[in-house]
Length: 168
Image 1 (cartoon, rainbow, N blue to C red):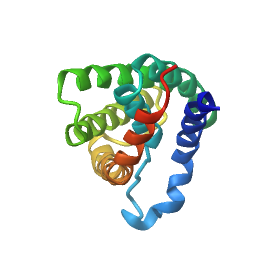
Image 2: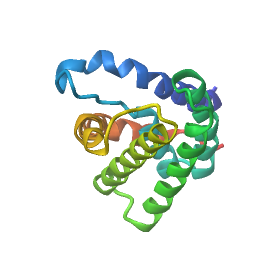
Image 3: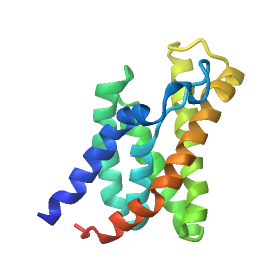
Image 4: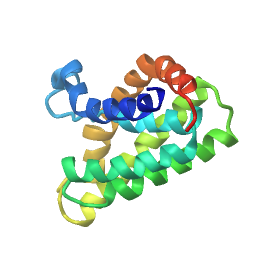
């Protein structure tokens, strides 16, 4: 039974990215601002830091593929970049102190990196007409703020959950 807790938690985090907009209304940041929840990425980073990096990489690869299928039109984008960001962040956690305050900056850096990579991919395949300045003000800022709030609310419960899960 305990072996099912980790996949169940990952599935809940995966689907919570699309459900989180029901908790935080779109008008919170204004009509022109776009805030994207990256709770799934935050969960993967907690898994890599407080459970097992290799398990987090496997889940990030698998669910990155699912994320590409369900949410994006570019197959392979999240499947490749989610594990890369999880790997980079796990290395940062080992170099820096493994404390929730420091980990907050690593999480926000990871969200920033993912958003920047996805924006550049969309520019590359001409799926967006947004300029870099528009991206910074209308999407990146609100996204970082929303994910900071999510981190502040869920850091301790997620850390405790991943520390109590059995290592597979």
